Image 1 (cartoon, rainbow, N blue to C red):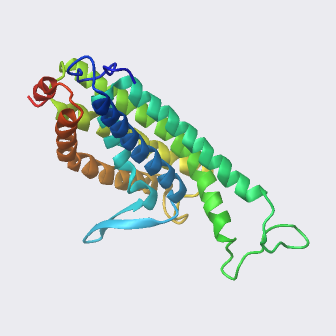
Image 2 (cartoon, rainbow, N blue to C red):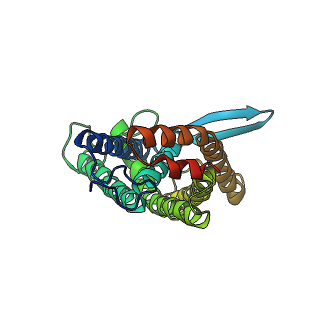
Length: 266
């Protein structure tokens, strides 16, 4: 990172940044990137291993995959990186996230092909299932991971790039004003793209969604999309306050020009 951060919303003051301030900027970027990448790796492992009930009203229940619970944090991190460090840095983190996805897939694949100590059927060579018809836990996780990671990678790339591009589109359109607009507008649009892509790709290419064959398919898919997006919508709206607080506090902590931030509040 250069002394004055390129492509940034904020301009360093002064142009020659003291070493301890530069260390702060590097550390904050590392923390935001670490939260983003760690959350991404966690949600790809958890995926659709379990669906949880978020909210129930009368007979209407909002259920989402447990892997979706930490997902809104990834958009908060990329928005903060976009605001403080610029579009280029945000896109770099997105690409590293893709490599992380590929790394997770490789390790899960490798763990399944190396010899282990599970019992195998002497005739077929396949894993022996338990009384409930299940394979060992690792292989269930492996199957779910393979079933969802392709969907999540496609959706992730699309949604994250939409988020970054829309964030800067709104920023340029409003000439740096209305921080809440670019934060919420970019996140809400990108999460709709992400949720729809994950549900549709996971079902049609992996077939691992808990679909009831006795009911019509598309209403169930729309419900899954609606549930997931509703959860992300509420989370995105709730993160507006923390986003403002983080940008305001970090702009001072990192010695970035506050005048631009004050303009964005208008």
